[in-house]
Image (cartoon, rainbow, N blue to C red; front, side, top):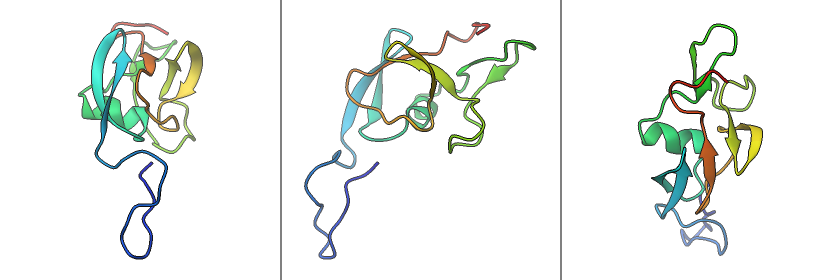
Length: 105
């Protein structure tokens, strides 16, 4: 989510600064992210494509629809399981658990 801009082009007060970076923890390791972007976007930007595994087939899961409809990007965020990465915005210190590349949900 970027800062809103007034008609004169100046940013409105409040909200994240466009381009500002924050650090989030993904499976215990620090990952840089752009303030206000989605967790899914931050993970993809960091090269993390597998967000979990299908509990039946074991196939990798990742961001599919990108708008909160498919539930394929569910992660544990700040200790709360079942959070959709595409709908959650990053903030400094956010803790994300994917279960790692070998997780079986």
